Image (cartoon, rainbow, N blue to C red; front, top):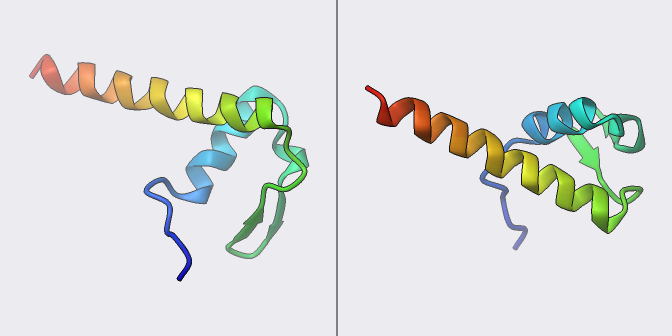
Length: 63
């Protein structure tokens, strides 16, 4: 059984775009292939996801 990601591929792709290596992610419709990324690049996407989550949490704490 395939595992579903908590984060959408579109969000991961947007972070890769911000970091400058989205062109290495192959897309066909709604399918994303990350096999051309290095471990470092994948880690940078994870770090970007964590930073975005922390920003959202800090915004919600101020309410």
